[in-house]
Image 1 (cartoon, rainbow, N blue to C red):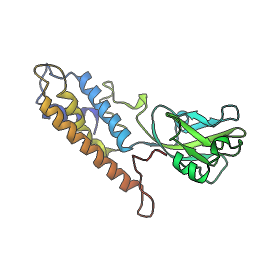
Image 2 (image 1 turned 90 degrees about the horizontal axis):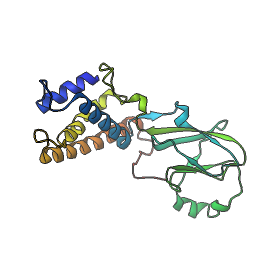
Image 3 (image 1 turned 60 degrees about the horizontal axis):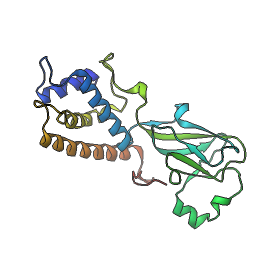
Image 4 (image 1 turned 30 degrees about the vertical axis):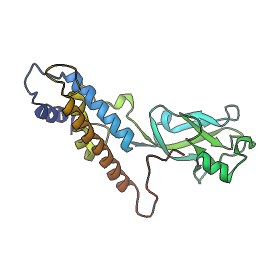
Length: 226
């Protein structure tokens, strides 16, 4: 679906098809971008291994173990050091305490593990690097600024896969009925569509997981942070 397709469907359901509109195009655009951002962030709909600013982390002895993640990263799916065939193992604090109790005082060396569970907003590499490395990530992320919809390109489509475009609608409707105006605000409809949108996000997550992981692999779990 294009931006225009999305707008047409949403205006039809909102019964807002004639100008002057109750909801401006700029408002619908903002609602759509927020709905897409939530879908991408909560259902892990955007996978990225190619955007250097997001997926490459330079490690050095000087900087130690902790490195800031790009702000758009929701979760790191895979981490591999340049030149190494075996990816780093994802761990959390309980695993480290059980299997590597001296991890905090370990001498710098070739990192073998990584964690998102130790310092908020950062990746921790264990042991800390003993020289310079490049960590190459495969991540789930939210849309980058250049990927949001725009009124200048109404024929463009959302960055998420087309099979998930149908789930944008209820997210937009929930926001539309939250608009503080006597002709637009409807608390009951806002809550109704917000609940429906959360169900859509969950369905998108399940569909994405089923298409990404085979029966022989461990399925992704959003609640696991280690």
